[in-house]
Length: 412
Ligand code: UDP
Image (cartoon, rainbow, N blue to C red; front, side, top):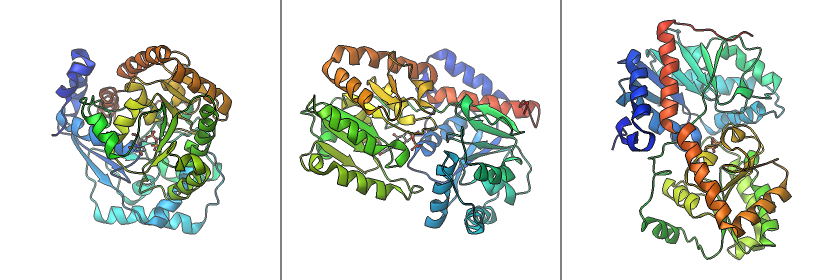
């Protein structure tokens, strides 16, 4: 079934629905194309799967194209991803050629005569170089931009200065010396997707059974790609501390995204370090890509952890809050936008493993506390981080171009 805005009325209320329709009015029939580099895996694909049909439903003609790349290309863009988050990188001609080459290929085979082009993340950023520019181009960066490698950022500006607007997830990612228009639009989740929708009673035990997941002990879960920025080894360390006080299990669920070649190495390392706990079944590692499984895990876990070292936004946090679960997470990137410490979840410095462990033990042994935090958590997502809010923000941004082709409100 194709998603329609009306399906969300019961969850967000009439006022939200009407305000979205109002905002779409200037955009009827306009062609919008979103471009990213994967249909599956990761937060971007997740959002586009709902955003694109909803844009169409409100009268915008929206499409979605994928920039295909080979393993070398994804290896390089992964390095870029790490360097945007502050790691050193050596920019070589070969890296630049492979990067721009995949973009040039795409441009050779794909016409873009839309009214707006929205490019997501660094992989397709250079595309703008290979088109005769005839419309506003928007770069939507989902990554933490607070401290990018200077060398890489300089290189990116080569493309970025041609864009009309850059969208970031949070005010700390605005770039003070970037003379193009910049907007803050936090991401959002779809409450009706397979990953987030309410589940009938029978489905949960069936799914647990299918994936061999026992619920005889309390469960701590992190759902994230096996990626060093998500610190799965740190989660394992926290779990070992918790396990001394509460007999529980840890689930690490991380599908392997096509654009994330480091995943397998990190997975192997976690597996090795989990050692005996893994053999006893107290650590469960899952690498399947399955939305229903994520939904079920977020509902049956006693505590959800997101121990990221860097985190652009952290959709997994939003998803877990929406399930009304107690979430313990790092005070980094987009996570503090979502969690107000002690109210709808708990925040820690990423290296405070003791603090994490203590709070998890407290939550596992005090169900009333967990329930009350969980209730506040769900309502906080309803107010701020559902896909309807994201749709409204995009419509407003695109309409602003219609009034004035090249808005510029950045003082830098
Ligand atoms: N995800 C998933 N299966 C997994 C791991 C992650 O479906 O095994 C999803 C997760 O539910 C979320 C997205 O991938 O919707 C990850 O988004 P997030 O912003 O948390 O992190 P990113 O991977 O984009 O850095």
